[in-house]
Length: 186
Ligand code: 5GP
Image 1 (cartoon, rainbow, N blue to C red):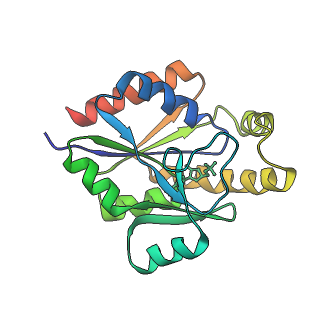
Image 2: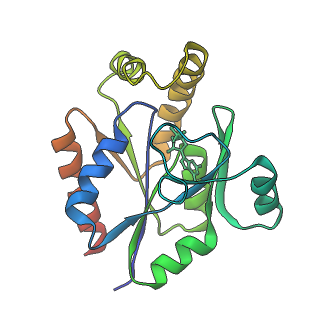
């Protein structure tokens, strides 16, 4: 059976990282999460080659010029991208791949690979989302304002997704994700 590419997006602070981590703790035999390239600085605890490939702006620009990205986008002042070769290799190895990326990139993926399944993790409310984002204490006020602006744009783009999963609880969101992936693979 052919392996599939799943794309998961959600606004900053929606808890998609937690949902995905929980999903992967139960499904790592069949799925892997792609490792993206980014020009942003690592956050405390993040490791190069595990969370991201942390690259310079020059390295990133070179990969864009050489057409090495399946998709790439700028988000909150930093560049992020998925290498074509990485995805192709994993699918050929027989692994279902999950991209955890923002919405501009997801829409590019759908254009290039219409068989990819786009899943958007939605917040219970925008107020709750801002509360969660502030609670993370990883961004300053300017960065939070910038990200809340992105939230509105991302919610609008979520209309182009195949599925929307409401993250009212991690258990519910993980169960939904399992149901969707299972039905897409059967
Ligand atoms: P963060 O800086 O919080 O790790 O990620 C910021 C945003 O960039 C998140 O929405 C994340 O999903 C997205 N992102 C991470 N990797 C990629 C990528 O390879 N491509 C795109 N388009 N977005 C990405």
